[in-house]
Length: 428
Image (cartoon, rainbow, N blue to C red):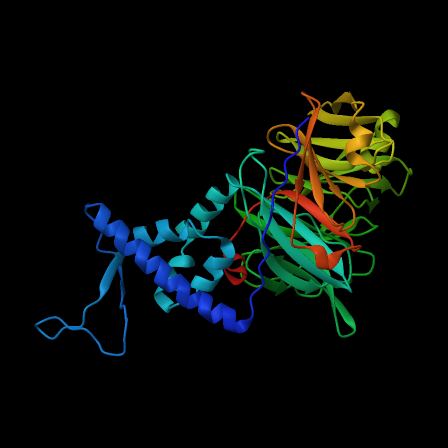
């Protein structure tokens, strides 16, 4: 058993600081770009950005009277921007029209997203006074590495938020006397209000990403045979009706895996417990029958992505554990067609109670290195997240500093959050 603490710095920016950051970003990128050009000699394309540098009010000119400028190839600009965080990219977009055009290029946004998939983030969502406050931190890959975190944005909230899907989040926000569905990018602070559906009473909102067509879709699930779906990125936003053969009551836990949305539900006709599978590409529903011994895991546990397979974590206290917990169950859907599940029971070691103490921990998910991640339900001081290695039966605790202002308030933690720098208006 090894304990490792990580100090995290949280930053917030005032409008004046943003202007200073913009100036700093320009200077920094220019410096890096020029040095990189001096270090290596190579042929570059004709596609260049011309960026004038001004160190003083007096313009420097060459002997022939032409103003000096620094020409940076677009591919080098892209390479520099790929090393920045998403929030800095959003700031660099304001530097000039040329910079904005480079950042909005499809090849750049897709490359940035691809690299983000290999450096996943932890996303923290704190709820305070009806608002959401987002923070991010690099996900633990090595217990001995140092890392830092930044504060993101805050939004007003009126209902449950969805899990992050490819860098975006869906939730409902109340403005004046009306409630609307909102898509937000916590890394850049961009939001988009979706059009009002014909009726939103009793609807549960789900966000899903279809990787083949690279489309985001929003599903409104009702307690009836008719649901509504909206496809993003097809021009004018509009809701359309789709049919569902089994009217159901949606549960609160959902997960999107390879373009399929999974969530627990109760069949309104029979009262049976089921798992709804919404395939985003054909926009079709499938259903998994929940056997009696799996009901607790499916509806009281938390649905997770386990190495690309649907799975569930559950304990004696449903989706929570504390110092008194004795076991953790991991259910994995091995064959979706045959609806075959495997069940693994992990007996917690004797030192568990001493390390966890009186904390109420919530299952977050399983990391890519097969560690179960646990996080407190409420902001505490200190605030520790835990990584439990199910094979070695060891646990690492990592302290996250900077969210002390939210002590006593609800906090949700998400694994594998990726930074998406594509503008919402371009996505939609």
